[in-house]
Length: 137
Image 1 (cartoon, rainbow, N blue to C red):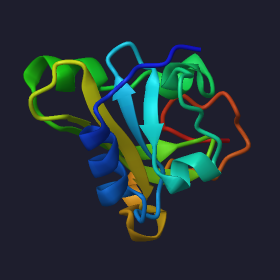
Image 2 (cartoon, helix red, strand yellow):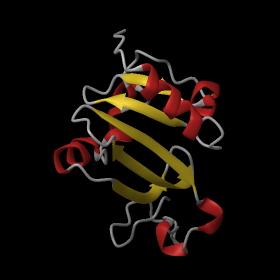
Image 3 (cartoon, one colour):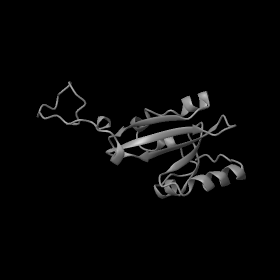
């Protein structure tokens, strides 16, 4: 595990703004090392010094927008259904102002508010080889 030091001010501000947020929030280095996490992130097991890209499977990270957010110095957002969680997440990658190396990453579960079009459909047929829809079988 790698430890990346940030200023006391950055650490203090991170916790000041994010510790009471109800969903996990990570402060992440461009190499994907978790630099810090809020209380919800700690509760779900995010470990400082580990790599966020190593959580779950590679498939879980195929929509990662961290590189784009850092390159463009602007927040990126993705909303979508996550099969492993059976939920719709609203995810963000937000570069820290004045830093080329650090960003916030968090997602919120918006399943109860999500439009039907965000959920996979199920077929009315028993044909499991159906290629005409996005069925989950």
